[in-house]
Length: 320
Image (cartoon, rainbow, N blue to C red):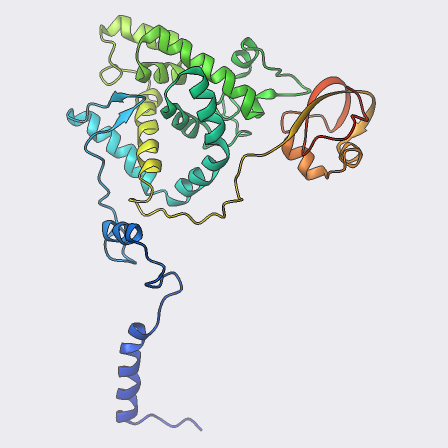
């Protein structure tokens, strides 16, 4: 039979509950041994632990591709703050950017450095595709830098019913670098080059001619293009200041590393399935398909096809 608690017992229980949090450590609270000086600084910047922070502040100076963004203009600052606050408060998306960056930024940075282009252009890839090589837009643009089929073909990539090389980061990076370099040569500034990348060079050139200004931050452009450079700048601010804004490294070092592969060219006289091809090269179906997203054929025949393998085989048993 239930027996009511007396008053002294009830008071004792309530007092114990009041002091219980002070004696317990939440699972996500680091111990004193785990907190470095840098982490302490980050926690102080965030404010009280467990409390949401909404008063993130932009750096006093923001540059993009070596160009200073004119934050002294109120309209410019408000636009950048808008994009910045949207990005920094989308914590799951920022963390996915950071993890994917481990895989793709080394490739992008190497391609940009080889062409003598600013490293900040890697943030354009984040704005375009969230660093997802197989994502497609409603307009049919695909790849890490989102090229439409006609532009990809113009630069020599295969885009047909059998394969779509826009899904491969490396060749798409090469044409992206060439395209951006051409746009910068035409417009003389990276902000205008990025705007032209988004809306087309003819549209930007027409806007400059009709409006009599060649400053991206003063031009009246399509709504998406007017946000575009600000969004890229905001992504740069958030990713470069991730520690200050409360993002800490959590992914294991071996996750999201660049994929290693051996590329060969194969021609198939007889039809062969991906399962059979994987068995032939001593790998598995999933690994082979993940390395070759550019080939849409469920059964391979004809060619030649650029095929990526997880390692160099002793001999090419099928085709050359």
